[in-house]
Length: 76
Length: 76
Length: 147
Length: 147
Image (tube, rainbow over all chains, first blue to last red; front, side):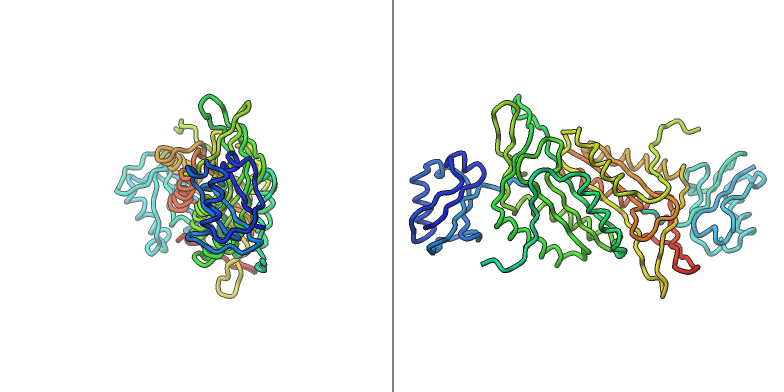
């Protein structure tokens, strides 16, 4: 299983802060899968982190990984 | 009378924080008079204020005035 | 997996003035310090349309935020001659007028503390995965945007 | 002669942490404030030759200093969008580890408070007729020099 987490305003669209999904080979495939589940992601701004590291290109996802979808930060 | 005040390290040389003196016509004359009284002033760094205003050129001193001899500031 | 020991910067609820006072007082024993610089973020009761912000609810991807903070700390200690640096960020609902961020730097000479504090605040706002939800009077809310 | 009402910035003895906490807490009611910047000057136990500084004794030409501070305040309020600014400088003997200067600025957006605080500290050190006498262990002393 892979844990997919959503933060900030993204949770307005997903309605949940995380979902468990079956294995997916890589981050591009996972992002596409999430866009099918949650069409609002097509027009959202977010970054994706795999196991706490920002993903800037397609990356292999190992079983048990955690993926985070994060909108622009607004702390402080 | 005129009150002449000394601050900071200048008081090491004068031994007093202020002296009352007879009227003196202007600040140049007063500075010279003080240098006679306290020869260390010849080699000291200081600014002179007349009635709380910095003096940058020779200025007339009215009776009842206060003159301050001030070494470089070291507050904070 | 995580072996590096990271300081937790998050506390549930606002940063209290008494906590700040205590942090300051603790540094009296370090007599090599000549200057402290402190930044405090306070929740503003902005008007959003015709409704006032009553509070901000902060959430975070805590693990990633602590990683990011550890990197910021490392960079700032490498760049400035600091004696110490302390950061506290609130999570949960922080009411207007309450303190949600406390950054505290100390150094022998003032410039390092002042510059480090300011840089740390900018980096916290830009690099920490933290989100603020502005809770409006009545029912609504709006997600905070950092400038 | 003096008709302008000037704030007194001088207090005999150190600035206590509890006083700082109280100043911070007072600003919770001003919910237009988004950021506070604080600078604290702390007396360092420097080594002067083989003797340690135990305290600094501060004296001032108070009247002139308050005039100078009023001018600094006026300039800084003209230059930055500040909500408020508070300055406290100690006079008398302040022991190593104690706080001798407290500058506190607040603004809607952080940049004004941060820049104003830093500029205020620089101007206080350069423009206020205040002198520090570093009292060494044993008998000696040395007059402080600002850099």
